[in-house]
Length: 214
Image (cartoon, rainbow, N blue to C red; front, side):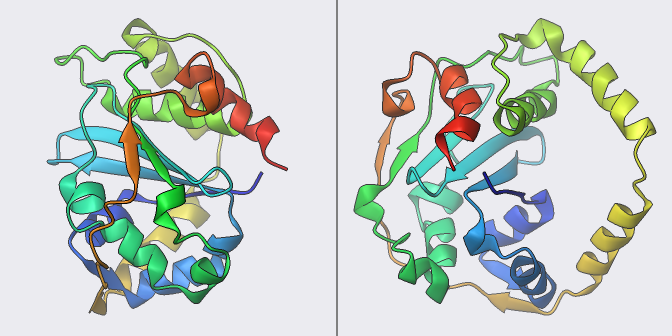
């Protein structure tokens, strides 16, 4: 399984319909069309974190929101910026990723709820990322978020972040902004709240992706 995690700065620019030369270089460097999965964190109205998972082999958009909301209009429903971004690339067209009638947008409602006042949305996102990457299926709730925080703090304190920070700063300095073709409105993408492939739960599907993909 090949997986690529996007930074939120990229998604914010994408939803505005612009993308920088710096990001184009980053996309080329990471060979995005060889990746099976994209993990795209989304910052909603600057106060709420959600996660969009793009599973190319399954032709699935999976939107995970601890408040059970809908994906941002400017990303999926309205101008479909993400679809337009994908269509801009010849490799995506060659691999037939742009046959949108074959794709499904899943917005599941069987995922753990967040207490609105808890501010735990970002930790919920991290929990889903961990489940997808490791293939670990474990039940969690909003009550477990402090345990996640402690685990992440321990990992960060024992990891050399200097190289990553420098790389991020170099990316931010390359901001020759160019318009992104938003593409047409793709009404062929089916949206539902069902669990993909008739798994018993979204948790089971997310933890199984690693074994389902070669």
